[in-house]
Amino acid sequence: MKPILAAILAIGTCAAQATAAAANPEPRTQNPIPLIFDTDMGNDVDDTLALGMIHALQSRGHCRLIAVTSTKDHPLSAPFIDAVNTFYGRGDIPVGAVRGGVTPEKGKYLGIIETIDDGRPRYPHDLRGGADAPDAVSLLRKALAAEADGSVAIAQVGFSSNLARLLDSPADAASPLSGRDLVAKKVRLLSLMFGAFQPIKGKTHKEYNVIKDIPAAKKLVAEWPGPMVFSGFEIGIAIPYPAESILRDYRYEPHHPLVDSYAAYMPPPHCRPTWDLTSVLYAVWPDRGYFGLSGDGTVSVADDGVTTFAPSPGGGHRYLTATPDQVTRATEAFVQLCSQPPPTKSQTPR
Image (cartoon, rainbow, N blue to C red; front, side, top):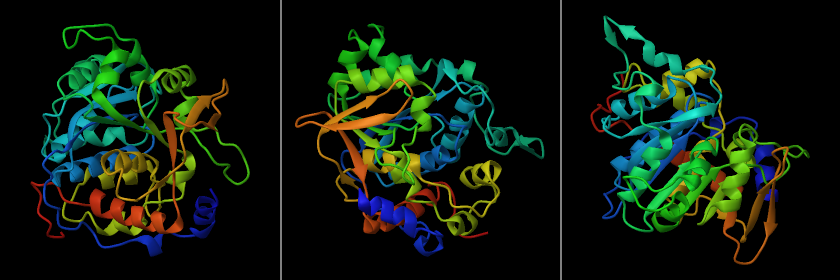
């Protein structure tokens, strides 16, 4: 994948890739894609930008966020997601929390939702803690069962814990089907930020989402009964989010959760890779040419977390590629979508 490596080397700064702030929303589509967002919200900050981008895509009528599930086992992860959804005017979107997951530490930015201004929460939210959220697997089953067959896209941008457990889930009140059969019936695409399929600076990379729950990652790639498209570590690192957009394009709101979480994670200016955004963009807009695709094959996970791709005609796995031109186009899309104001907010800069 020489174009990707060239792009990585070419990006000394990301200032040249910034474009205008949010564009006017496009006309609504007739059949927005039902989307599930499975995230380790609270670890890296790209999860936050990805969730904001989903809301912009929903406002444009291209997707309908039916559930968000967290694989980060900290009590504030689910409430943070609820706060972001509420900021975008969609506090009714159900949020599920992992039980007995990994990464229980608080992280750098979840605590912003505890901020109080003049006796009122800066970021209102109904969920007070992860224990108040439904179990993630139960919510996944309920969300899938309610949708049309073959209609749902899932963007997994955290660990594989929830989806691996979904495969093993038994029939319940939501559906008489096993988890595997429910997935096979309802899911059209699983788009994952998972693994690494090209060397980084000549070295094999053990990607974070995989190595934090290797048993779940191994199970997911071996048993998922439908198409899987992987965005490897090399893709997101080649498309940094422009720092000047964080500083400039969100000024319509004095306290924006995307900006505040970005600053809490690492004081700006900095250009954070867009790993999770790539999987979301492909899940909703797979046919717009933002990325290329490998041929068919099979992804496997070694005991140490190294991912490999074996070409195989008819295999159910593919991974994203990107040329320098696609890197520029994806950056433009990320800036416009992430900075798009919520439907209830003014676009007038403050």
